[in-house]
Image (tube, rainbow, N blue to C red; front, side, top):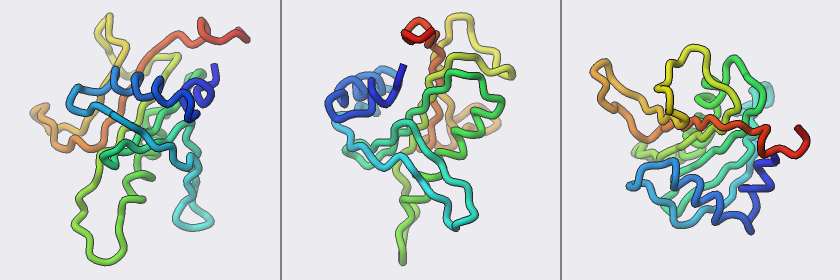
Amino acid sequence: MDLKKIFGEEASKPLLIDFLNALLPQANKIIDLIFKNTEHLGQTEADRKAIFDIYCENENGEKFIVELQKAKQNFFKERTVYYSTFPIREQAEKGEWDYNLKAVYCVGILDFTFDDYEPEKSEVVHIIKLKNQYGKTFYNKNTQVYQQVKLKSYDNRN
């Protein structure tokens, strides 16, 4: 399955909008998206770069990274947190700036489960936000969404 082919082209934008709207709370309804450059360079030549599968922005300036991960990767959570720093950093304005950031959503479509996570039996979508020691959301503008699916059933090569 080629995620970019299914969701990442202008002609299939309505599919991507429907997919993201199904994962996100009603309050975050997406009306339209603009596809953005998927390659992000570090701040210096020596810094690591990131290449997203799909990167887009909605009408409110909120950013969405969508990543497909078929093979298990030990540090996939860390990778998505790292990836989310790129759209956060690109919001910085030169000169006077109030630091009011737009939300960033990193969506991972996974063909595996995390070893260190104990989901409910029927849980296939995991929505992660920064919370305090009492379980209350401390910061709601950086959201990690992981959806577990069996990709092989959709892949004609397997």
